[in-house]
Image (cartoon, rainbow, N blue to C red):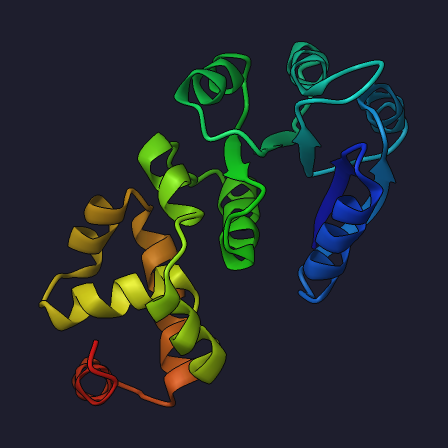
Length: 208
């Protein structure tokens, strides 16, 4: 079980994230906090694996949260949730010790996978990947509705169809190889296929 705490002064957004995460059996949200100080105080008495923090908050902002967590030699990982897709903000977050960075309008599946990657210590930090997570795509939306495929899963299907190996796909998308393997298992389950050949045939049927 991955224990999570969320700091964001937009209550509706925070509750929405909580509801999204609670749909997954391996994720548990221990608390929602409207500012960084409340979160930091909570961390003093509670064991949290991953913190999701907004940057712009009253009293103590996200950078303050990062400083507090990292200076305290805590094992807690921190993922920044930001509405700004500026590389300067991304780099400052990483410089201050962020373990991950996700845009608030990213696909929900990307947040879930980032949490798992960060918790397991296999997350690959890459700004281009951050931008790609939130890029609108009507083609993706149609397949998400029909097969419940995420944008990342559709990208991986296309690369498998092109003959790339898990290692090649990981390098192409800036992911860890184990993450690609997890995505492939999920793809097989969603499409009801059990081999690469069946997957490629299904991709042809879907005109991917």
